[in-house]
Image (cartoon, rainbow, N blue to C red):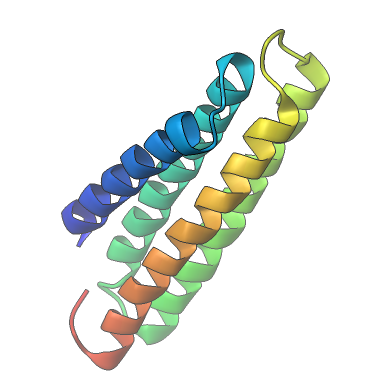
Amino acid sequence: MILRHGVMVVLIVLAGAAVLALGARLQGPALRGALLGALLAAAGSMVGATIMARASRGGARRFYGGVAAGILARFLLFLGVLIGIGLARPAGLPLAAVALSLLGFFFVFQALEVRLVMRRSIGGGA
């Protein structure tokens, strides 16, 4: 489950990076900020998938608790990163680019995780 999810996350990040660089024509600091947001969302998605995989060894209640805990933990992590960037104001890293990219990729990866949850719920295995 984690390997398949990881491959999908990497493919989505690569496709998203190509769209950001070529399609959106972002350059310099905006591109770096958007890529940082994409990488943070990807890391969060992998952490969430790992939590789900471990929780799937228990019953349904433990599994859904793991899903909820993973989502909450990522929100807190992302909030902390955004607050840190906002307070530090590193040169050449626009907060808006990081935040928008992080939010966009987070929702894409959430859709991917919903697929995993549905497969687990229907009985397709974890």
